[in-house]
Amino acid sequence: MTLPQTRSAETPVAGTLALEGFLPYRLARAAEIISRQFATLYRERHGLTRPEWRTLATIGQFNRITATEIGTHSSMHKTKVSRAIRALEERKWITRQVDQTDRRVEHIELTREGRIHYRDLVTLARSYEARLVEMLGETGAAELEAGISAIETRIERS
Amino acid sequence: MTLPQTRSAETPVAGTLALEGFLPYRLARAAEIISRQFATLYRERHGLTRPEWRTLATIGQFNRITATEIGTHSSMHKTKVSRAIRALEERKWITRQVDQTDRRVEHIELTREGRIHYRDLVTLARSYEARLVEMLGETGAAELEAGISAIETRIERS
DNA sequence: GCATAACAGTCGCAGTCGCAACAATTAAGG
DNA sequence: CCTTAATTGTTGCGACTGCGACTGTTATGC
Image 1 (cartoon, rainbow over the protein chains, first blue to last red):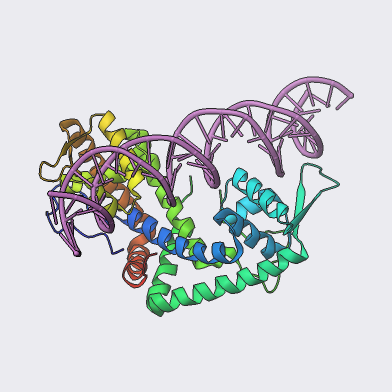
Image 2 (tube, chains in turn yellow, blue, red, brown):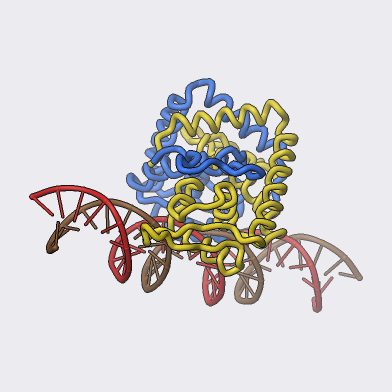
């Protein structure tokens, strides 16, 4: 697959918008390319979906955490988190225990097996990120990070 | 909603990956924020979904185009395009006519009504993009574009 | 000319998504 | 207390998604 090009057959029409130059489209497309590429790795290697990967990454990062906190930290809707947690629990990669002082809350931790997979995922993630930076070049990667930082700090979320 | 923070309650654990610093995650998140923000505009104003917006934008850009070309240009799966085309046709924003020399192919054009909405969408898109660049600052926006360009030119798509 | 492959677009289906509603529990206000 | 509001996590549901199979058509190779 190649970059979306202006069709060879016809010329763009005046008074129009060039989709391939429109920043939100380009950003969405770039993110999707990277996301899919990385997802292929953890899907093939661990059989995880994207929500499951994010959930596992968050649990591993904090060792003991609640579902709501996972959602906040990984920018996922609570139903996505809930379903990912259930899937990871069924694989016996995590356990939950109800908080005794507030029984609405469940604390989630990795099992021994979960920790093994998490460590491997961290390695996978680091190596993919390194490969990505290498492909983009130091300059390109730095610019991308700076641009993303601008979004993170300057855009108010809906 | 605020940026995902390291939880105040606990400190990150050693040997882990910080999701909030992981480039693919940050990129996906940034794209989603922008995408949602812009989608709110065209959804509220024209009642379009994301695939419909991309499809309409592509048809308007080329004036006369086929479904396959729309998919290539807008990076969308052919079923997504097919369904978006049907929805736009039901609104009478587009028409299709079968190519007489190759009857597999359909040429799609905007109707008068479709063109009216398209022009408004172009204005909406340009003003959102301008607002976005303003929020990011000239530097931030330029860096973001450069980073995206690096992805577009250096990453081979799956 | 005929069989086979390639291609355009559609559709059925199973999986995923987010919203709204929900049960269970705790917090807040009088 | 006791009522009402807020919070945590789950679930039902309708909408959306991509895959593979399909129809109809054109291109290719013998």
